[in-house]
Amino acid sequence: MADLGQCSFVCMIYRWGHVTEACSYFRRAVACNPGFLPARRNFQGTCNFLVERWHFRMLNDMVRNDAYRAAIVRRVLQQGSDSSVLDIGAGTGILRLVISLIIALLILL
Picture 1: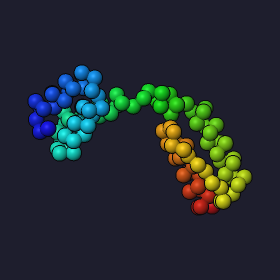
Picture 2: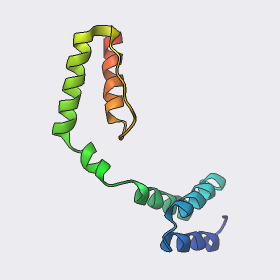
Picture 3: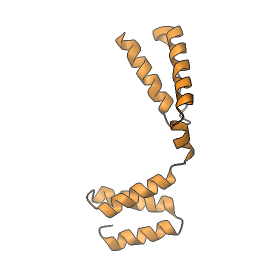
Picture 4: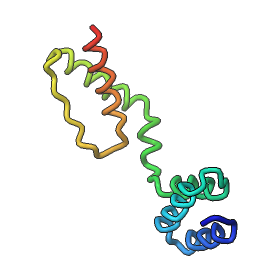
């Protein structure tokens, strides 16, 4: 996909409801020519469309995230440096980030 005509065709694929396929074509176009802005914009747009919206509410829920962080910190401090934490990978990875930061702080202390 090197020109606007091909990019427009993939846009039609997107409009017909084949979002995952269109995203794949846009990804390939960006890999072939990272400077081709129409493909880059369309790739970003299709990726945004594919992200489920419930993640945004969850990521911005500071009360919930602070409660999880506090519980993890409390438990890791109780267990000490021998703590084991399992993240089953069912969400956004925010808890994994919290765990990594806590473990890094334990190592530094």
